[in-house]
Image (cartoon, rainbow, N blue to C red):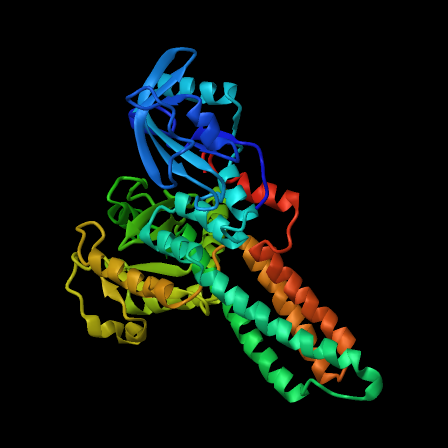
Length: 462
């Protein structure tokens, strides 16, 4: 374990509250707090205290009582950072917080940088880098799906997969290296058929991880949903109903929505990012035309498309043309299309006339009267399927995604090397490259710049 200076910072949000916690960590943490802390008998007891014990007393500096408090002791290596640590629970006054931190600094501590506690946990081997990044994701999670993903990564689910990949690649590399050592004796230690089979297994896992990023990122940052249709189909009304607030302007005038409007809502523990788009129609209005271009751009970046058909003003033949036009402008292969027949409360609906849409399982709704909107929510939730979080390891971090792309490229180079019967030393280079990129995820290979970028996302005190 490396030794650094002793740091301190407020671990709870700044401002007044019932309590606040100041965290101190470092080789001298307990000694520094001991200089300030007196138990009810006026004794200094923290240096002799056992780890994971809490002590009631008061913080005193320059003969002045700052506050009554509880100090909790964590001795190295049994703490979050792996260092000696003390957590001081105080009353939540900003004056008390500031006075306590100033007293700690004057007694030998220094203010922590953003993320410095978690950075020390990584440097001291308490977490690998992917787990450290999961800490930030937990802090920033706004829904149960994002929290579940981050917590699973923190507990090592992703780490275990990477460790298995690394060991399998090392096995292949070891056999190839051994073959090189005895190359002059024409001994083949590595059965190429066996190595190809092992490599295929590795490639399958890496490919699944790479392909999972789209879903993992959606769960983490919100599943993008586009609301699309002709002008006055009821898109803005639907958005307002889904959000349960008047976010979008609703008007009978066609072309009211000129730009995309984006808002998020939590449904069943999954965050959905709704994008209300400009109505699709032929227009000579320059601004409206630009809005329609942006509509198609946002739709192509969506995972779910809610396509509204205004049944009161659209014939079945017209609806069919709308869907064909959509398919002409949008690649639906990696998207889920939900057809919503809106304003179905205004006329008698002959659902049989929409038989050609049955494969798309249309939902007959009234956005204005909130009819069947719950069915729309259920459909979106079934598509997002938060159960995938429990059953799969998903990539959610763009840095990890880029590294896994490099890993996949290196494995494909190894695969080509086997096909072309290339020398073992050349194949071994590509395997080492794959191992390098896995190491950049876990932190076995890193730089101060990478660490700086990662931990700058953290708040001070974590």
